[in-house]
Each structure stands twice: as structure tokens, then as C-alpha cells.
Image (cartoon, rainbow, N blue to C red):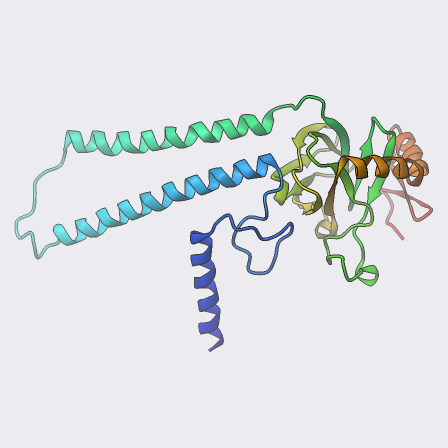
Length: 293
């Protein structure tokens, strides 16, 4: 009985994924989710739109190929063809079944290349934020506002009812709605990957290298992500929370953050020039080369 119910769930989930691939599910993954998360940026909206177009093309191709296969089995089976055909080549047929896939590939390549260029562009008048990966937490710097702070996962014993286990953090990355954000990403130890699915962004952070990408959030809210590169024992405990607020709320937050993170900003900026990177957390220093207490 349990097996039958499980098969029913899988079948329903598969059918739902085909009929509604871009259903809005929220800003974090949910059980039995088959579609994308709610698109909250121009980038993710274009990714979902391209996915839906490709899905239609794939379904049409699958139907046509399946129909041809069944027709071939029916039309050319041994019972209906007592005398075997000696045909080995058909020039026009070979031209057609070569040309049609080539045309389809070119038709798919054009929107794909457009999306790649859109993702890779560098927006003008963007807000600059630096993202630094550590084992196993994130640091954020707002160089134009002289703000820097660390972002740690909230442990189970401290989780609040409104927070999400394994996804909520103590300090969110706060950004204004509708403003292009230029993210510069690096790492202080090993490879990490900064990824927020609902915003359509994912970029590796590499030690000794500065990668760059951009994002723009369309509406206020909390958007969750995680490190997407296996980075060690606590890889699964490096959540990301992007908090999008209005311009007025962002201005208020900036003024409060300058005071709240003043000590942490000084320590991070000084430590970035040292061999060992220290971060300020709960009034203590932590060296990445020594285990945290």
C-alpha cells in the first residue's frame, strides 16, 4: 500500500511538473517541489521563460519522434512485409532529418545566447557589495558605506518560530529593491559557491580570485540560498539570506548598520591585509586556521 501511494505521489508530481513548470513555490525549497522558486529578479524571470519555451520544444520533439517510432514498428513489421526492402539510402530524407535538427538547434541557440549576454552584462550605477566565503560562514562588505559584517547560520537551539531551520542567519544581506547590485566574490580558504535560486544567481568564490556578477531584486522580501560547492565538513550549514527592502528602509538600515557593525568593519578591513583572517563574532576573535570554540 505504501509503495502504491508513493508511486501515485511521484506520478502526480511528474504530471504537475509538466503542466505547470513555472509555478510559484516561494523563496525557498519546499517538500515535493518540482518547479522553480518564485522569480524575484529580471534574470530569473528570463531563465524561467527560456525554460518554458524549451520545454514546449522538447515535448513536441518527443511526441513527433514517438509517433514516427510507433508508425515504423507498425508499418514495417515482418507480418506486413513478407519481402524485405533493399533500399539503403534516400537523399532527400537524409537531408531533411539533418536540416530540421540543425534549424531547431539554431532556434534554441539564439535566445540562449541572448540570456547569457544579459546575465554577463555590467549594469551602470550599481551598488557594490563584496562577498567573502569562509569555512563555514559568509562575510559581506559595503565598501561605499564602510560597512562589513559576518553572517552565520542560526543554530537549532536558537531558532525562532518565524525562522527557517538550516536557512535563517543572524545577519541578512540587505539590498534595496529595484537597484542593480554588483557583487564581487572571493574566498578566504577553499572554493565556495554563492547561490540564491529565486534570484537566478550562482557564482563560485575562489581563493585569490575576484569573481563578479550582478542581481536586481524586484520586490521586497527574504530570499534564501545556500553554498552550492562542497567546501568541507559543514558545507550544508552555510545559508544565504538576501533581504530586499524599499529605498527608505535601506537608508535607515545603512545608518543603523554603521553603528552596529563599526567594530566588525574595522577588524575585517585590518585582517584582510594579514596572513590569517580574523572575524569578530560574539566578542571573540576566530582564526580560520584554528577550530572555533
